[in-house]
Image 1 (tube, each protein chain N blue to C red):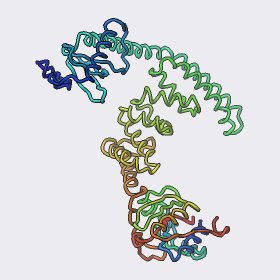
Image 2 (image 1 turned 30 degrees about the horizontal axis):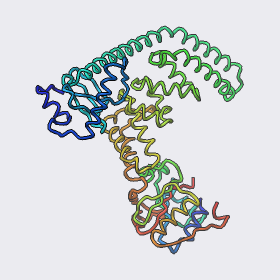
Image 3 (image 1 turned 180 degrees about the horizontal axis):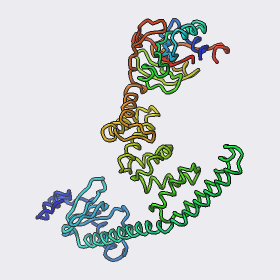
Length: 344
Length: 112
């Protein structure tokens, strides 16, 4: 937003009541609320809550006020969300002194919060590095015990069964190790280990959730999208968060496939949008079986558009078992059970 | 499947109803004989010598066999993969839309 030169125009433009509007009973009562709020801000609250609570914003002259939540604070202006959901950008120098102070506090808090976040992330990464030795020793111990199992076991199924508790136990240890540094590379390796080694239950869920939460844009998670996709909510989260082209493409296609499987007409528009996105942006991306997504998405698109409930069935033109030509559409006017069968 | 389908076709022989197959056996001569022997009276498209990889099932993206579609009189897909009693109900509901009230029942040995 650029700054306007005259306050009057600015106020009008951002939708505050123009000066000539008569004061209604409603605005009088609102005005009283404003006074009360201003009192609280000036005298009472030391640490304003930056949650999305509405407060009353007042202009410099004190004549006009509006109830709104702060959405974003820019250098010279503030973006407010009004009670009816609309957005208004107001120049800071149009605001009352109390509002300007509120904005300044808000800015200070946000800067401090961002700095703290950055610092935490850096520390988290740093501490992750420190954990590498410990990680290695847990994995060494696992490998050793797994080797013992293989040598003492008699058949494959028995070894598999005995291995599972070991995987669970190791997963627990590993997840605990990186609990405080979920964004570190070591943590990523842990989550992938847990998922790849077939951990189940809480451990698997924790690892998958952490991968989606912190590593949605890492190509390393590509082979595990199928596992993530078992939980539709996780898949949706991954799809919306992913920035890596391959991850985004595969997640988008899988989401379309999952949503289309229900054959729900209410979801069709969304499925078509996702598939068209795959075709236009991710056609050359390959899935974990190295098949490009483009042709797969086009086939699914055809199915959704032509083979869903409510669509006119595509015609079949062929020959019967005696070699006599006929068409499916010859049977219009009749109820038809179409049965794909074989005696093999 | 055959006895249920045979029974359905027989009961609805005087109604606007057809069972149409898409057969995925690779050898058309053999399946013609089998159809005769097993009294499979309904008409089937032949999916071609590639069997389940044939052109019709590919176009219809068939992944499992059997796959069932139920179409209404306008050729609109109304039900998918209904079997047994669910298939009977689906067909009866579409016939009812056309003003044909039918009650489909099967002899025990037919309905397996």
